[in-house]
Every structure is written in structure tokens, then in C-alpha cells.
Length: 232
Ligand code: SF4
Image (cartoon, rainbow, N blue to C red; front, side, top):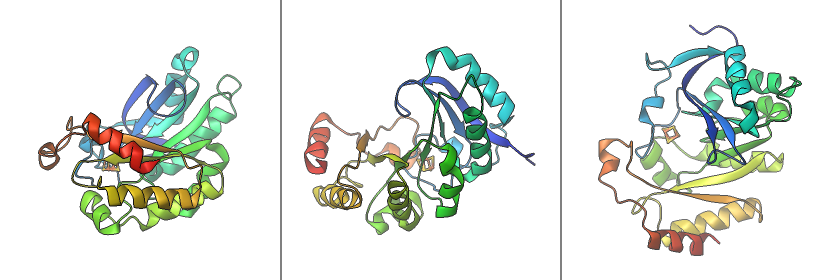
């Protein structure tokens, strides 16, 4: 049983260049409300597992202080960070109220499957959200994640409307969600929400995925050229 302001933590990366703008401390929380076939870290899906470490906000702040000379911000990822949103809020609040840490930016890397109340809760202390869209087509989304994308699409629109959506990330998997039609429809929908929408392509790799997805082809250089041309 977790006490107040504690979280199930899957892992920590003290410095990362790929989890938001600049060099960032990244906290990966345990537990996810999707079950993606192409998940690169399926061990982070169950909320309760002996592999996770229970950490309180003060312990995480101590770890952040050790990285301070080298980082411009903190990203909370997962799993799905918003499942433990009370902890994330407290962590970000304490960062923003700490004389040594207040200049750090606070970002969340999310699958978007959180209701508006959760975003409203987090927004005052969150500088930006990087949000994954696994598929615009709902049937495809269900096939890839086990869940509908209705809440995800609402999250994209809502976060954009309050100025908190940093970028939308597309994990593109050959033969699963990368047809020309899917790419063009996705670009049209995202740019309909905001013509200046920042879209990031994440290329599928088989490293770390479960057996079913290990059979799928990885993204080639030719695929990447096509993705950029259809999404631009
Ligand atoms: S949303 Fe992310 S962490 Fe959750 S199952 Fe999908 S890929 Fe894995």
C-alpha cells in the first residue's frame, strides 16, 4: 500500500536527450492503462510488481539534485504517468517551489488516456505534455492497445486548447498503422486541431517487444522518407 506522495517507480534515467526538450532527468513510473502489442517496456504495464521500487517525492528530489548540473528539466514517463497523477503533481509542485530546482521544466510523457480532470489537476505545475497517438482509427487503436482512442483524442484537443501540448508522438509500425491513408488522415486531423501541431515520428523497433510484435518488420529508411512526406 502506497503512502501519500509515494509512487511505484519502474526506473530512472539521470540524463536523457530523447524525452523532451534539452537534457532531462526521466522518471519512469510503473503501471499502464493500455496493453500495447508493440510496447517496448512491457514489464512496466502491471501497476504492482516486485520489480518496481516505491519512492517518495523527497527521494526523487534528491536524485534530481544529483543531476542538476547537467539537466534543463524533468520528464515523468511510464508506464503511464497519469495513473499516479497525485504523486506527479506533488513532485512538480515541489520542483517549482524549490529555489535550487525551480528553473527546471516539468514534462509528462503520456499515452493520453486520462480524463480532463486529471489534466486540470496537473496543468498548473506542468510545462508540457508529450502525447502518444497509436492510431487515429479507433478499430486499429483497439487492435494495437486493447482500448479505444476516444479519451486520447479528447486529451489532444484539450491539452492543445490550454497550451500544454508540446508534441504528439506517432509510433509507426510497418503494416499496422503506417498506410498512406492512415498517415494522411492523421496529419489532417492533428493539423485540424492546430495547424502548427508538432508531430514526432517514432520508428518501430523490435527490441524489447513481446513475441507477437517481434515478428513485425522494423521501419526502414524508405519508410521514414514516406512517413515524412505524408505527414508534412
Ligand atoms: S502506452 Fe506505452 S507503456 Fe503503456 S502499454 Fe502502450 S507502449 Fe507500453
